[in-house]
Figure 1 (cartoon, rainbow, N blue to C red):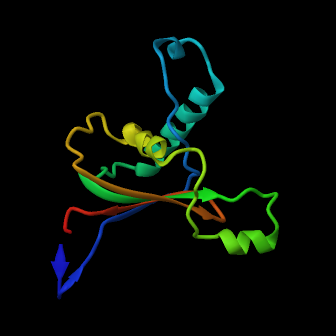
Figure 2: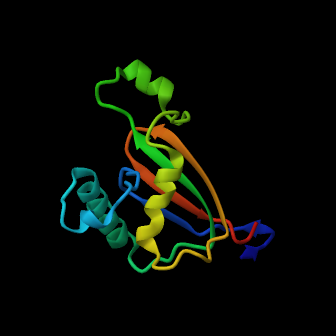
Length: 130
């Protein structure tokens, strides 16, 4: 919506470290692989934090990946807000949004980035008004 010449984007911040969605098989219903259990905990927490909020059909998402605690203060200062250029891959982070929608076929536009940060978070901006 536009108001007095300014565009306001709906914003949602999830205070949770992003986790890539693992490849799952039918056996994961009974086999308790650690990667799948971590993802299920992540998905449950995302649903709790969403509190009835609905993922828009077009959005920009920033995955803020927490820096390792073993890094020096100097390295942390250098790396904050810089691109995260290693695994997990960005597409696997994007797939983790399956937990917020039962049917995601109406999503028509996603732009995404993953960057280093002091704490993990996922920030979503609504792009429907662009």
